[in-house]
Image (cartoon, rainbow, N blue to C red; front, side, top):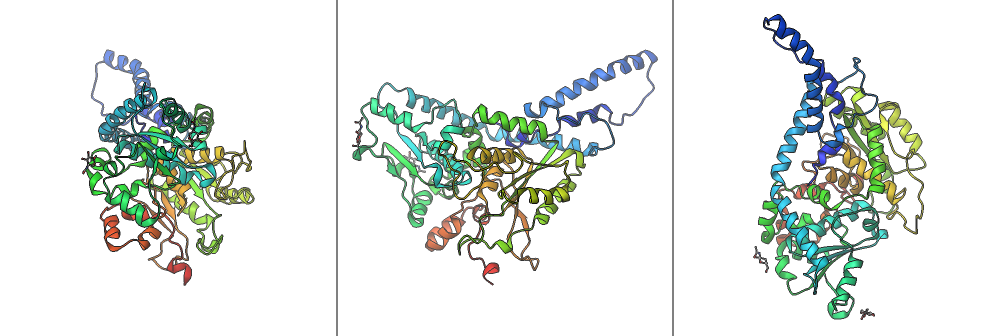
Length: 494
Ligand SMILES: *[C@@H]1O[C@H](CO)[C@@H](O)[C@H](O)[C@H]1NC(C)=O
Ligand SMILES: *[C@@H]1O[C@H](CO)[C@@H](O)[C@H](O)[C@H]1NC(C)=O
């Protein structure tokens, strides 16, 4: 079953107490016996309603958030809670109906995959996604794995993954390990590292990438190759496939809203219980009715001439203002809201958290590990791309952001937009710059939950008119390009 990402937020359960206090009822005179009976039954009916409500809100939500059983005046208005519940139900129904064709496709995929793994002779064709932990941060790596799944589904191949982080932290009923599959192939007499057997690498370079992913029937193009390899792709290449006329029907059938990442990530990105336990525990202990992630990136500026300028970073106050606005817009009381902070500066974390806390309130700002876990080379695995903390702490923060109901994130950070994509919601991006006029707002909200294709702008500059037009033929092209930084923007260079 494809979990509904938004449900991960664990909304609404504790508010049921409000229900029992009763919606206004119109009274008609009743015989005394009936009235007595009704009075006796009322508490029963109320508790039945509570249970029903909690079940409807999903298993996560069924856990009562601690500290929320009191019936004091400090609660959001009942109408707000009703709205949240109704939205959840609506979303669940829509998701379930929309996912039907994809569920069936994934069922067929499972059968194909198991046939590949258990074959008595040389199994069916495969696609292998390969890269190393040090190649990028998890915000660029996870989309690559999900793109691989999309390709394997589309090309009727079995997917295998060679990526230490994925194999260490994720678990699945299907065996995606490339190492194990390569051994199986060898047992069937196929040595995948022999020159004539080496899988065909999906080509590199902007022009070729665009040509293959946007113009070729990829199934036919790689038809003669037993193995195909996606090597160091490290981007959300699905963004290119959406424009491909040969695969239009496929996308339309299985991804009618064009949310591709969320359902596929929910299928393939299953965190091992050992790590997931900590995430669930943190959530249970700290999350409330509505949780707003705040992903504040302060690093990765002024590193080289291509990077954004540190002096043009959004201010901490502006993140807080937007987060607070989201709370008020929903009519949520302080007690029903938590701000989950994920930042990237260990040195200044306490200071920064202090600033966030000062504005949003100590009781309401939550974060893991007292800020950022100290970097370590846990079993020789370093967090890549100058990212702080450990891979485990990064995954924990990303997953918790995905479990939030909304996110205020730093523009151009794949760590932020991939978290939102995983959770299946559209985040607010905080924008660098001086914001001196209304044409340069300091935030915007994206329209869909899809992650960015971070190379898009540089790629578009390298393409000819035909390829640019092809990319722009997809209404989502803005979504795929605007959520990443444009190096050397006008505002910066002026
Ligand atoms: C597989 O092929 C590679 C490259 O030719 C070779 O080095 C290796 O020994 C082979 N493995 C086996 C088990 O034959
Ligand atoms: C793409 O190629 C495959 C395999 O050759 C073929 O079955 C399919 O019909 C082609 N799709 C389109 C839209 O041309």
